[in-house]
Length: 593
View 1 (cartoon, rainbow, N blue to C red):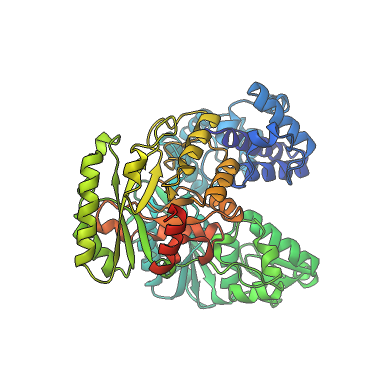
View 2: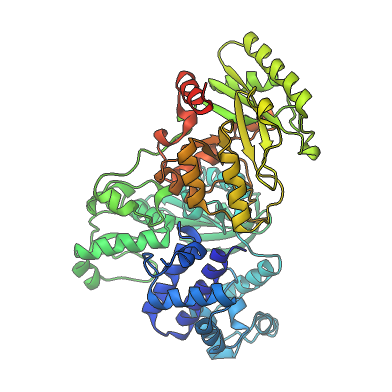
Protein backbone atom coordinates (compact mmCIF):
# COMPACT_ATOMS: atom_id res chain seq x y z
CA UNK A 1 0.00 0.00 0.00
CA UNK A 2 1.37 3.45 -0.91
CA UNK A 3 1.90 6.09 1.77
CA UNK A 4 -0.99 8.09 0.33
CA UNK A 5 -3.27 5.06 0.63
CA UNK A 6 -2.09 4.32 4.18
CA UNK A 7 -2.69 7.91 5.25
CA UNK A 8 -6.07 8.05 3.51
CA UNK A 9 -7.16 4.96 5.47
CA UNK A 10 -5.89 6.53 8.70
CA UNK A 11 -7.89 9.74 8.19
CA UNK A 12 -11.02 7.85 7.06
CA UNK A 13 -10.88 5.72 10.20
CA UNK A 14 -10.26 8.76 12.40
CA UNK A 15 -13.33 10.47 10.93
CA UNK A 16 -15.46 7.38 11.58
CA UNK A 17 -14.30 7.19 15.19
CA UNK A 18 -15.27 10.83 15.70
CA UNK A 19 -18.66 10.16 14.10
CA UNK A 20 -19.17 7.13 16.31
CA UNK A 21 -18.39 9.16 19.41
CA UNK A 22 -20.46 12.09 18.14
CA UNK A 23 -17.38 14.16 18.82
CA UNK A 24 -16.33 17.25 16.86
CA UNK A 25 -18.25 16.83 13.57
CA UNK A 26 -16.25 19.62 11.94
CA UNK A 27 -13.01 17.75 12.57
CA UNK A 28 -14.58 14.58 11.16
CA UNK A 29 -15.51 16.47 8.00
CA UNK A 30 -11.97 17.85 7.76
CA UNK A 31 -10.46 14.36 8.17
CA UNK A 32 -12.74 12.98 5.47
CA UNK A 33 -11.63 15.74 3.11
CA UNK A 34 -7.98 14.97 3.79
CA UNK A 35 -8.61 11.25 3.20
CA UNK A 36 -10.26 11.96 -0.12
CA UNK A 37 -7.52 14.37 -1.16
CA UNK A 38 -4.87 11.74 -0.45
CA UNK A 39 -6.80 8.95 -2.12
CA UNK A 40 -8.28 10.62 -5.19
CA UNK A 41 -6.49 13.95 -5.51
CA UNK A 42 -3.18 14.79 -7.12
CA UNK A 43 -1.34 15.42 -3.85
CA UNK A 44 1.69 13.24 -3.17
CA UNK A 45 2.06 13.33 0.62
CA UNK A 46 5.71 12.29 0.67
CA UNK A 47 6.73 14.84 -1.95
CA UNK A 48 4.70 17.64 -0.35
CA UNK A 49 6.37 16.87 2.98
CA UNK A 50 9.84 16.75 1.46
CA UNK A 51 9.22 20.08 -0.30
CA UNK A 52 7.85 21.71 2.86
CA UNK A 53 4.47 22.30 1.22
CA UNK A 54 2.10 20.18 3.33
CA UNK A 55 0.42 23.12 5.09
CA UNK A 56 0.25 25.06 1.83
CA UNK A 57 -1.78 22.26 0.26
CA UNK A 58 -5.42 23.23 -0.03
CA UNK A 59 -7.52 20.97 2.17
CA UNK A 60 -4.75 20.01 4.63
CA UNK A 61 -4.86 22.01 7.85
CA UNK A 62 -2.20 22.37 10.49
CA UNK A 63 -3.22 19.44 12.72
CA UNK A 64 -3.66 17.15 9.71
CA UNK A 65 -0.25 18.17 8.39
CA UNK A 66 1.28 17.35 11.80
CA UNK A 67 -0.31 13.89 11.70
CA UNK A 68 1.00 13.28 8.18
CA UNK A 69 4.52 14.40 9.09
CA UNK A 70 4.65 12.18 12.15
CA UNK A 71 3.32 9.19 10.23
CA UNK A 72 5.85 9.61 7.43
CA UNK A 73 8.67 9.98 9.96
CA UNK A 74 7.72 7.19 12.38
CA UNK A 75 5.06 5.02 10.77
CA UNK A 76 2.39 6.11 13.25
CA UNK A 77 0.39 9.12 14.42
CA UNK A 78 0.11 9.85 18.14
CA UNK A 79 -3.20 11.70 17.65
CA UNK A 80 -4.66 8.77 15.73
CA UNK A 81 -3.41 6.21 18.27
CA UNK A 82 -5.03 8.22 21.09
CA UNK A 83 -8.27 8.40 19.13
CA UNK A 84 -8.18 4.64 18.52
CA UNK A 85 -7.55 3.98 22.20
CA UNK A 86 -10.71 5.92 23.11
CA UNK A 87 -12.97 3.12 21.83
CA UNK A 88 -12.85 -0.68 22.05
CA UNK A 89 -10.32 -2.00 19.55
CA UNK A 90 -12.76 -4.45 17.97
CA UNK A 91 -15.08 -1.68 16.76
CA UNK A 92 -12.64 -0.47 14.13
CA UNK A 93 -12.84 -3.58 11.87
CA UNK A 94 -16.64 -3.19 12.01
CA UNK A 95 -16.28 0.04 10.00
CA UNK A 96 -15.32 -2.12 7.01
CA UNK A 97 -18.51 -4.19 7.12
CA UNK A 98 -20.66 -3.33 4.06
CA UNK A 99 -23.55 -1.07 5.04
CA UNK A 100 -22.33 -0.67 8.65
CA UNK A 101 -21.99 2.99 9.56
CA UNK A 102 -20.78 4.61 12.79
CA UNK A 103 -24.35 5.25 14.04
CA UNK A 104 -25.32 1.60 13.72
CA UNK A 105 -22.08 0.46 15.37
CA UNK A 106 -22.66 2.92 18.22
CA UNK A 107 -26.23 1.64 18.66
CA UNK A 108 -25.04 -1.99 18.90
CA UNK A 109 -22.32 -0.98 21.35
CA UNK A 110 -24.68 1.00 23.58
CA UNK A 111 -27.60 -1.42 23.53
CA UNK A 112 -25.90 -4.83 23.51
CA UNK A 113 -22.22 -4.15 24.30
CA UNK A 114 -21.23 -5.47 20.86
CA UNK A 115 -17.63 -4.40 20.33
CA UNK A 116 -16.36 -6.72 17.60
CA UNK A 117 -17.44 -8.60 14.49
CA UNK A 118 -17.21 -11.83 16.49
CA UNK A 119 -19.55 -10.51 19.18
CA UNK A 120 -21.96 -9.32 16.51
CA UNK A 121 -21.98 -12.75 14.91
CA UNK A 122 -22.61 -14.41 18.29
CA UNK A 123 -25.40 -11.97 19.14
CA UNK A 124 -27.11 -12.74 15.84
CA UNK A 125 -26.82 -16.50 16.39
CA UNK A 126 -28.27 -16.23 19.91
CA UNK A 127 -31.06 -13.85 18.96
CA UNK A 128 -29.78 -11.07 21.21
CA UNK A 129 -30.54 -8.26 18.75
CA UNK A 130 -34.27 -8.61 19.17
CA UNK A 131 -35.73 -5.54 20.78
CA UNK A 132 -33.05 -3.12 19.65
CA UNK A 133 -34.93 -0.12 18.28
CA UNK A 134 -34.48 0.26 14.52
CA UNK A 135 -32.97 -3.20 14.02
CA UNK A 136 -35.50 -5.64 12.64
CA UNK A 137 -35.25 -9.03 10.93
CA UNK A 138 -34.27 -7.59 7.56
CA UNK A 139 -31.48 -5.53 9.06
CA UNK A 140 -30.21 -8.54 10.98
CA UNK A 141 -30.11 -10.52 7.74
CA UNK A 142 -28.15 -7.64 6.28
CA UNK A 143 -25.64 -7.92 9.14
CA UNK A 144 -25.24 -11.64 8.38
CA UNK A 145 -24.58 -10.93 4.73
CA UNK A 146 -22.11 -8.17 5.62
CA UNK A 147 -20.16 -10.50 7.91
CA UNK A 148 -20.12 -13.19 5.23
CA UNK A 149 -18.88 -10.69 2.64
CA UNK A 150 -16.18 -9.49 5.05
CA UNK A 151 -14.95 -13.05 5.45
CA UNK A 152 -14.67 -13.32 1.66
CA UNK A 153 -12.73 -10.07 1.43
CA UNK A 154 -15.42 -7.43 0.89
CA UNK A 155 -13.17 -5.16 -1.19
CA UNK A 156 -14.33 -3.03 -4.06
CA UNK A 157 -14.45 -4.82 -7.39
CA UNK A 158 -12.93 -3.56 -10.60
CA UNK A 159 -15.64 -1.89 -12.66
CA UNK A 160 -15.04 -4.10 -15.68
CA UNK A 161 -15.64 -7.17 -13.52
CA UNK A 162 -19.19 -6.08 -12.70
CA UNK A 163 -20.22 -4.05 -15.74
CA UNK A 164 -21.60 -6.95 -17.76
CA UNK A 165 -23.93 -8.19 -15.03
CA UNK A 166 -24.88 -4.61 -14.13
CA UNK A 167 -25.80 -3.91 -17.76
CA UNK A 168 -27.80 -7.14 -17.89
CA UNK A 169 -29.78 -6.17 -14.81
CA UNK A 170 -30.25 -2.62 -16.06
CA UNK A 171 -31.72 -3.89 -19.33
CA UNK A 172 -33.91 -6.32 -17.41
CA UNK A 173 -35.09 -3.47 -15.18
CA UNK A 174 -35.92 -1.34 -18.19
CA UNK A 175 -38.09 -4.16 -19.48
CA UNK A 176 -40.21 -4.53 -16.34
CA UNK A 177 -43.84 -3.51 -16.65
CA UNK A 178 -44.34 -0.04 -15.23
CA UNK A 179 -40.73 1.12 -15.67
CA UNK A 180 -40.55 4.15 -17.97
CA UNK A 181 -36.78 4.60 -17.84
CA UNK A 182 -33.87 3.25 -15.84
CA UNK A 183 -30.26 4.27 -15.35
CA UNK A 184 -27.26 3.11 -13.35
CA UNK A 185 -26.11 5.46 -10.62
CA UNK A 186 -23.34 5.54 -8.03
CA UNK A 187 -19.72 4.71 -8.77
CA UNK A 188 -20.75 2.73 -11.82
CA UNK A 189 -22.31 5.73 -13.55
CA UNK A 190 -19.35 7.89 -12.58
CA UNK A 191 -17.15 5.15 -14.08
CA UNK A 192 -14.87 4.85 -11.09
CA UNK A 193 -12.33 2.11 -11.63
CA UNK A 194 -13.73 0.15 -8.67
CA UNK A 195 -17.27 -0.24 -7.34
CA UNK A 196 -18.62 -1.72 -4.12
CA UNK A 197 -22.20 -2.31 -5.24
CA UNK A 198 -24.53 -1.37 -8.07
CA UNK A 199 -27.30 1.25 -7.84
CA UNK A 200 -30.09 1.23 -10.42
CA UNK A 201 -32.70 4.01 -10.55
CA UNK A 202 -36.06 3.31 -12.20
CA UNK A 203 -38.39 6.11 -13.30
CA UNK A 204 -42.04 5.14 -12.97
CA UNK A 205 -45.40 6.87 -13.27
CA UNK A 206 -46.37 8.75 -10.13
CA UNK A 207 -49.17 6.25 -9.45
CA UNK A 208 -47.21 3.11 -10.38
CA UNK A 209 -47.30 -0.03 -8.22
CA UNK A 210 -43.74 -0.11 -6.92
CA UNK A 211 -44.27 -3.38 -5.06
CA UNK A 212 -45.14 -5.21 -8.28
CA UNK A 213 -42.01 -3.85 -9.99
CA UNK A 214 -39.64 -4.84 -7.19
CA UNK A 215 -41.29 -8.26 -6.93
CA UNK A 216 -40.66 -8.85 -10.63
CA UNK A 217 -37.05 -7.66 -10.27
CA UNK A 218 -36.49 -10.05 -7.36
CA UNK A 219 -37.58 -12.98 -9.53
CA UNK A 220 -34.98 -12.41 -12.27
CA UNK A 221 -32.95 -15.53 -12.99
CA UNK A 222 -29.63 -13.86 -12.14
CA UNK A 223 -30.77 -13.08 -8.58
CA UNK A 224 -29.22 -15.40 -5.94
CA UNK A 225 -30.74 -13.85 -2.84
CA UNK A 226 -33.20 -11.09 -1.99
CA UNK A 227 -32.00 -8.84 0.85
CA UNK A 228 -34.74 -6.19 0.87
CA UNK A 229 -37.97 -5.93 -1.08
CA UNK A 230 -40.61 -3.24 -0.76
CA UNK A 231 -42.55 -0.65 -2.77
CA UNK A 232 -39.58 1.71 -3.21
CA UNK A 233 -36.49 -0.52 -3.15
CA UNK A 234 -35.25 -4.01 -3.90
CA UNK A 235 -31.77 -5.15 -2.87
CA UNK A 236 -30.43 -8.44 -4.21
CA UNK A 237 -27.20 -10.43 -4.42
CA UNK A 238 -26.00 -11.70 -7.78
CA UNK A 239 -22.88 -13.45 -9.08
CA UNK A 240 -20.16 -13.58 -6.46
CA UNK A 241 -22.40 -11.78 -3.96
CA UNK A 242 -22.41 -8.43 -5.73
CA UNK A 243 -25.17 -6.31 -4.20
CA UNK A 244 -27.53 -4.58 -6.60
CA UNK A 245 -30.10 -2.04 -5.38
CA UNK A 246 -33.09 -1.06 -7.53
CA UNK A 247 -34.85 2.11 -6.41
CA UNK A 248 -38.33 3.03 -7.62
CA UNK A 249 -38.65 6.78 -8.22
CA UNK A 250 -41.83 8.62 -9.34
CA UNK A 251 -41.12 10.41 -12.62
CA UNK A 252 -41.75 13.79 -11.03
CA UNK A 253 -38.67 13.27 -8.83
CA UNK A 254 -36.47 11.19 -11.12
CA UNK A 255 -33.83 13.82 -12.00
CA UNK A 256 -33.17 14.83 -8.41
CA UNK A 257 -32.93 11.19 -7.32
CA UNK A 258 -30.52 10.41 -10.15
CA UNK A 259 -28.25 13.27 -9.08
CA UNK A 260 -28.44 12.21 -5.44
CA UNK A 261 -27.68 8.54 -6.00
CA UNK A 262 -25.06 9.16 -8.68
CA UNK A 263 -23.00 11.25 -6.25
CA UNK A 264 -20.25 11.54 -5.36
CA UNK A 265 -21.02 12.55 -1.79
CA UNK A 266 -18.65 15.51 -2.10
CA UNK A 267 -20.22 16.67 -5.35
CA UNK A 268 -23.67 16.51 -3.78
CA UNK A 269 -22.49 18.46 -0.74
CA UNK A 270 -21.17 21.18 -3.06
CA UNK A 271 -24.52 21.35 -4.87
CA UNK A 272 -26.43 21.56 -1.60
CA UNK A 273 -24.20 24.41 -0.48
CA UNK A 274 -25.02 26.39 -3.64
CA UNK A 275 -28.70 25.62 -3.14
CA UNK A 276 -28.56 26.84 0.46
CA UNK A 277 -26.99 30.12 -0.67
CA UNK A 278 -30.02 30.62 -2.91
CA UNK A 279 -32.52 29.88 -0.15
CA UNK A 280 -33.17 26.43 -1.55
CA UNK A 281 -32.92 22.86 -0.27
CA UNK A 282 -31.65 20.04 -2.50
CA UNK A 283 -32.34 16.41 -1.65
CA UNK A 284 -33.25 13.17 -3.41
CA UNK A 285 -36.82 14.38 -3.95
CA UNK A 286 -35.96 17.65 -5.64
CA UNK A 287 -34.89 21.26 -5.30
CA UNK A 288 -37.27 23.11 -2.95
CA UNK A 289 -37.64 26.55 -1.47
CA UNK A 290 -36.22 26.07 2.01
CA UNK A 291 -39.02 27.90 3.86
CA UNK A 292 -41.67 25.81 2.14
CA UNK A 293 -39.71 22.58 2.65
CA UNK A 294 -39.38 23.23 6.38
CA UNK A 295 -43.13 23.77 6.70
CA UNK A 296 -44.07 20.84 4.45
CA UNK A 297 -46.10 17.85 5.59
CA UNK A 298 -43.50 15.11 5.16
CA UNK A 299 -43.84 11.41 5.87
CA UNK A 300 -40.84 9.05 6.10
CA UNK A 301 -39.82 7.70 2.71
CA UNK A 302 -42.18 9.99 0.78
CA UNK A 303 -41.92 13.45 -0.82
CA UNK A 304 -44.07 16.24 0.60
CA UNK A 305 -47.55 16.20 -0.91
CA UNK A 306 -48.27 19.88 -0.30
CA UNK A 307 -45.13 21.51 -1.77
CA UNK A 308 -44.02 21.65 -5.39
CA UNK A 309 -40.29 21.43 -6.14
CA UNK A 310 -38.53 24.21 -8.03
CA UNK A 311 -36.96 21.48 -10.20
CA UNK A 312 -36.79 17.69 -9.93
CA UNK A 313 -38.01 15.81 -13.02
CA UNK A 314 -34.69 15.72 -14.86
CA UNK A 315 -31.07 16.44 -14.03
CA UNK A 316 -30.70 19.30 -16.47
CA UNK A 317 -33.53 21.24 -14.81
CA UNK A 318 -31.96 20.87 -11.37
CA UNK A 319 -28.54 22.04 -12.52
CA UNK A 320 -30.12 24.91 -14.48
CA UNK A 321 -32.07 26.03 -11.41
CA UNK A 322 -28.72 26.22 -9.63
CA UNK A 323 -27.41 28.44 -12.47
CA UNK A 324 -25.01 25.91 -13.92
CA UNK A 325 -24.75 23.66 -16.94
CA UNK A 326 -25.38 19.91 -16.68
CA UNK A 327 -22.31 18.05 -15.45
CA UNK A 328 -21.33 14.71 -16.97
CA UNK A 329 -21.45 11.93 -14.32
CA UNK A 330 -17.77 11.08 -14.78
CA UNK A 331 -16.81 14.54 -13.51
CA UNK A 332 -18.94 14.54 -10.37
CA UNK A 333 -16.14 14.20 -7.83
CA UNK A 334 -15.91 17.81 -6.53
CA UNK A 335 -12.64 18.44 -8.36
CA UNK A 336 -13.61 21.86 -9.66
CA UNK A 337 -16.40 20.74 -11.98
CA UNK A 338 -19.06 22.69 -10.05
CA UNK A 339 -17.21 25.98 -10.43
CA UNK A 340 -16.63 25.27 -14.13
CA UNK A 341 -20.32 24.50 -14.61
CA UNK A 342 -21.22 27.80 -12.98
CA UNK A 343 -18.91 29.60 -15.41
CA UNK A 344 -20.07 27.47 -18.37
CA UNK A 345 -16.48 26.29 -18.83
CA UNK A 346 -16.84 22.52 -18.61
CA UNK A 347 -14.59 20.55 -20.98
CA UNK A 348 -15.94 19.00 -24.17
CA UNK A 349 -15.22 15.49 -22.97
CA UNK A 350 -13.65 12.87 -25.18
CA UNK A 351 -15.89 10.25 -26.82
CA UNK A 352 -15.12 6.86 -28.33
CA UNK A 353 -15.86 8.14 -31.84
CA UNK A 354 -13.05 10.68 -31.46
CA UNK A 355 -10.30 8.02 -31.53
CA UNK A 356 -8.87 7.29 -34.98
CA UNK A 357 -6.45 4.47 -34.23
CA UNK A 358 -4.82 2.13 -31.76
CA UNK A 359 -1.09 2.36 -31.05
CA UNK A 360 -0.39 -0.62 -28.80
CA UNK A 361 -1.33 -4.12 -30.02
CA UNK A 362 0.17 -7.63 -30.16
CA UNK A 363 0.13 -10.51 -32.64
CA UNK A 364 1.15 -14.18 -32.73
CA UNK A 365 4.71 -12.98 -33.24
CA UNK A 366 4.86 -12.62 -29.43
CA UNK A 367 1.95 -13.48 -27.11
CA UNK A 368 -1.00 -12.40 -29.26
CA UNK A 369 -3.69 -14.63 -30.74
CA UNK A 370 -4.05 -13.16 -34.25
CA UNK A 371 -1.83 -12.49 -37.24
CA UNK A 372 -0.82 -9.07 -38.48
CA UNK A 373 -3.33 -9.33 -41.32
CA UNK A 374 -6.16 -10.34 -38.99
CA UNK A 375 -5.44 -7.47 -36.64
CA UNK A 376 -5.28 -5.02 -39.54
CA UNK A 377 -8.58 -6.15 -41.05
CA UNK A 378 -10.33 -6.13 -37.66
CA UNK A 379 -9.04 -2.62 -36.90
CA UNK A 380 -10.14 -1.43 -40.33
CA UNK A 381 -13.62 -2.88 -39.74
CA UNK A 382 -13.84 -0.83 -36.53
CA UNK A 383 -13.10 2.32 -38.52
CA UNK A 384 -9.51 2.78 -37.41
CA UNK A 385 -7.32 4.78 -39.76
CA UNK A 386 -4.04 3.51 -38.33
CA UNK A 387 -2.78 0.65 -36.21
CA UNK A 388 0.59 0.06 -34.52
CA UNK A 389 1.74 -3.53 -34.15
CA UNK A 390 3.88 -3.52 -31.00
CA UNK A 391 4.94 -7.04 -30.08
CA UNK A 392 7.06 -7.64 -27.01
CA UNK A 393 10.84 -7.24 -26.86
CA UNK A 394 13.31 -9.98 -26.04
CA UNK A 395 13.36 -9.68 -22.24
CA UNK A 396 9.69 -10.65 -22.08
CA UNK A 397 10.60 -14.31 -22.42
CA UNK A 398 7.28 -15.51 -21.05
CA UNK A 399 5.55 -13.46 -23.79
CA UNK A 400 7.78 -14.91 -26.54
CA UNK A 401 9.49 -11.57 -26.98
CA UNK A 402 11.35 -10.91 -30.22
CA UNK A 403 15.13 -10.74 -30.34
CA UNK A 404 16.70 -8.16 -32.66
CA UNK A 405 16.86 -10.46 -35.70
CA UNK A 406 13.22 -11.53 -35.34
CA UNK A 407 12.19 -7.90 -34.84
CA UNK A 408 13.93 -6.70 -38.02
CA UNK A 409 12.16 -9.41 -40.01
CA UNK A 410 8.89 -8.49 -38.26
CA UNK A 411 9.30 -4.85 -39.31
CA UNK A 412 9.71 -5.86 -42.96
CA UNK A 413 6.63 -8.09 -42.75
CA UNK A 414 4.46 -5.32 -41.30
CA UNK A 415 5.59 -2.91 -44.01
CA UNK A 416 4.83 -5.46 -46.73
CA UNK A 417 1.36 -6.09 -45.36
CA UNK A 418 0.78 -2.35 -45.10
CA UNK A 419 1.31 -2.09 -48.86
CA UNK A 420 -1.33 -4.75 -49.50
CA UNK A 421 -4.13 -3.52 -47.22
CA UNK A 422 -5.91 -0.33 -48.26
CA UNK A 423 -7.80 1.97 -45.90
CA UNK A 424 -5.55 1.70 -42.89
CA UNK A 425 -1.93 2.63 -42.13
CA UNK A 426 0.18 0.05 -40.33
CA UNK A 427 3.05 1.13 -38.09
CA UNK A 428 5.87 -1.30 -37.38
CA UNK A 429 6.39 -0.92 -33.68
CA UNK A 430 7.47 -2.68 -30.54
CA UNK A 431 6.58 -2.67 -26.86
CA UNK A 432 10.09 -2.43 -25.52
CA UNK A 433 10.82 -3.36 -21.92
CA UNK A 434 12.25 -0.63 -19.72
CA UNK A 435 14.82 -2.61 -17.75
CA UNK A 436 15.38 -2.03 -14.04
CA UNK A 437 18.24 0.41 -14.64
CA UNK A 438 16.32 2.45 -17.22
CA UNK A 439 18.01 1.03 -20.30
CA UNK A 440 15.83 -0.30 -23.11
CA UNK A 441 15.65 -3.85 -24.37
CA UNK A 442 17.02 -3.01 -27.84
CA UNK A 443 19.99 -0.83 -28.80
CA UNK A 444 19.32 2.52 -30.43
CA UNK A 445 20.34 1.34 -33.90
CA UNK A 446 17.49 -1.21 -33.77
CA UNK A 447 14.96 1.19 -32.21
CA UNK A 448 15.66 3.69 -35.00
CA UNK A 449 14.28 1.24 -37.55
CA UNK A 450 10.86 1.15 -35.86
CA UNK A 451 7.99 3.47 -36.82
CA UNK A 452 6.59 3.53 -33.29
CA UNK A 453 8.13 2.68 -29.92
CA UNK A 454 6.14 1.97 -26.76
CA UNK A 455 8.49 1.67 -23.77
CA UNK A 456 6.91 -0.10 -20.78
CA UNK A 457 7.88 -1.36 -17.30
CA UNK A 458 7.03 -5.03 -16.75
CA UNK A 459 9.43 -6.16 -14.03
CA UNK A 460 11.11 -4.78 -10.88
CA UNK A 461 7.86 -3.01 -9.97
CA UNK A 462 8.77 -2.71 -6.27
CA UNK A 463 11.61 -0.28 -6.77
CA UNK A 464 11.74 2.71 -4.46
CA UNK A 465 10.51 6.09 -5.62
CA UNK A 466 13.89 7.50 -6.65
CA UNK A 467 14.99 4.46 -8.67
CA UNK A 468 11.58 3.99 -10.27
CA UNK A 469 11.35 7.64 -11.32
CA UNK A 470 14.91 7.73 -12.70
CA UNK A 471 14.18 4.53 -14.62
CA UNK A 472 11.09 5.92 -16.35
CA UNK A 473 12.71 9.29 -17.06
CA UNK A 474 15.67 7.54 -18.68
CA UNK A 475 13.27 5.88 -21.12
CA UNK A 476 11.44 9.15 -21.74
CA UNK A 477 14.72 10.83 -22.64
CA UNK A 478 15.54 8.26 -25.32
CA UNK A 479 14.60 10.10 -28.55
CA UNK A 480 13.30 6.90 -30.13
CA UNK A 481 10.57 6.41 -27.51
CA UNK A 482 7.17 7.73 -28.56
CA UNK A 483 5.10 6.81 -25.52
CA UNK A 484 5.51 5.23 -22.10
CA UNK A 485 3.10 2.29 -21.90
CA UNK A 486 1.12 1.64 -18.70
CA UNK A 487 3.60 3.90 -16.87
CA UNK A 488 3.26 2.57 -13.31
CA UNK A 489 2.68 -1.09 -14.15
CA UNK A 490 -0.13 -1.30 -11.62
CA UNK A 491 -2.93 -3.90 -11.57
CA UNK A 492 -6.15 -2.73 -9.93
CA UNK A 493 -6.75 -4.55 -6.61
CA UNK A 494 -3.62 -6.66 -7.16
CA UNK A 495 -0.52 -4.44 -7.16
CA UNK A 496 0.10 -0.74 -6.88
CA UNK A 497 2.92 -0.46 -9.38
CA UNK A 498 5.86 1.91 -9.38
CA UNK A 499 5.76 4.77 -6.83
CA UNK A 500 6.68 7.44 -9.37
CA UNK A 501 7.35 11.11 -8.76
CA UNK A 502 4.81 12.03 -11.38
CA UNK A 503 5.68 15.72 -11.41
CA UNK A 504 9.21 14.82 -12.48
CA UNK A 505 7.89 12.36 -15.07
CA UNK A 506 5.56 15.00 -16.51
CA UNK A 507 8.37 17.52 -16.66
CA UNK A 508 10.54 15.06 -18.59
CA UNK A 509 7.69 14.29 -21.00
CA UNK A 510 7.06 17.95 -21.66
CA UNK A 511 10.76 18.56 -22.32
CA UNK A 512 11.09 15.65 -24.76
CA UNK A 513 7.61 15.49 -26.32
CA UNK A 514 7.20 11.90 -25.14
CA UNK A 515 3.57 10.87 -24.58
CA UNK A 516 2.07 8.81 -21.76
CA UNK A 517 -0.39 5.99 -22.26
CA UNK A 518 -3.80 5.40 -20.77
CA UNK A 519 -3.83 1.64 -21.16
CA UNK A 520 -7.49 0.68 -21.61
CA UNK A 521 -7.08 -2.96 -20.66
CA UNK A 522 -8.40 -4.13 -17.31
CA UNK A 523 -6.96 -4.50 -14.69
CA UNK A 524 -4.41 -1.90 -15.83
CA UNK A 525 -6.31 1.32 -16.67
CA UNK A 526 -2.92 2.94 -16.29
CA UNK A 527 -2.49 5.93 -16.12
CA UNK A 528 -5.51 6.36 -13.87
CA UNK A 529 -7.82 9.35 -14.01
CA UNK A 530 -6.12 11.52 -11.38
CA UNK A 531 -2.57 11.36 -12.82
CA UNK A 532 -3.98 11.63 -16.36
CA UNK A 533 -5.73 14.86 -15.38
CA UNK A 534 -2.51 16.22 -13.93
CA UNK A 535 -0.50 15.11 -16.97
CA UNK A 536 -2.80 16.99 -19.33
CA UNK A 537 -2.64 20.09 -17.12
CA UNK A 538 1.16 19.87 -17.32
CA UNK A 539 1.02 19.90 -21.12
CA UNK A 540 1.78 16.21 -21.63
CA UNK A 541 0.17 14.38 -24.56
CA UNK A 542 -1.83 11.24 -23.73
CA UNK A 543 -2.47 8.17 -25.91
CA UNK A 544 -5.36 5.73 -25.31
CA UNK A 545 -4.57 2.17 -26.42
CA UNK A 546 -6.15 -1.25 -26.01
CA UNK A 547 -2.97 -3.33 -25.57
CA UNK A 548 -5.02 -5.86 -27.58
CA UNK A 549 -3.72 -9.40 -27.84
CA UNK A 550 -6.38 -10.50 -30.31
CA UNK A 551 -8.95 -9.08 -32.71
CA UNK A 552 -11.60 -9.08 -29.96
CA UNK A 553 -9.42 -6.82 -27.82
CA UNK A 554 -9.38 -4.08 -30.46
CA UNK A 555 -12.92 -3.09 -29.49
CA UNK A 556 -11.80 -2.44 -25.91
CA UNK A 557 -11.05 1.28 -26.04
CA UNK A 558 -14.10 2.36 -24.00
CA UNK A 559 -12.51 1.74 -20.56
CA UNK A 560 -9.71 4.10 -21.58
CA UNK A 561 -12.28 6.66 -22.71
CA UNK A 562 -13.94 6.40 -19.30
CA UNK A 563 -10.62 7.14 -17.59
CA UNK A 564 -10.06 10.07 -19.93
CA UNK A 565 -13.52 11.51 -19.28
CA UNK A 566 -13.00 11.29 -15.51
CA UNK A 567 -9.72 13.11 -16.10
CA UNK A 568 -11.59 15.86 -17.98
CA UNK A 569 -9.72 15.20 -21.22
CA UNK A 570 -10.72 16.69 -24.56
CA UNK A 571 -9.65 15.70 -28.08
CA UNK A 572 -6.73 18.11 -27.97
CA UNK A 573 -5.17 16.15 -25.10
CA UNK A 574 -5.13 12.76 -26.84
CA UNK A 575 -2.71 11.98 -29.65
CA UNK A 576 -4.71 9.26 -31.37
CA UNK A 577 -7.64 11.58 -32.02
CA UNK A 578 -5.49 13.03 -34.83
CA UNK A 579 -5.75 12.11 -38.47
CA UNK A 580 -3.04 9.91 -39.93
CA UNK A 581 -1.49 12.95 -41.61
CA UNK A 582 -1.45 14.88 -38.33
CA UNK A 583 -0.05 11.91 -36.43
CA UNK A 584 2.70 11.49 -39.02
CA UNK A 585 3.71 15.13 -38.58
CA UNK A 586 3.88 14.67 -34.80
CA UNK A 587 5.82 11.43 -35.16
CA UNK A 588 8.38 12.87 -37.58
CA UNK A 589 8.98 15.78 -35.25
CA UNK A 590 9.28 13.51 -32.22
CA UNK A 591 11.72 11.16 -33.93
CA UNK A 592 13.67 13.98 -35.59
CA UNK A 593 12.97 12.76 -39.11
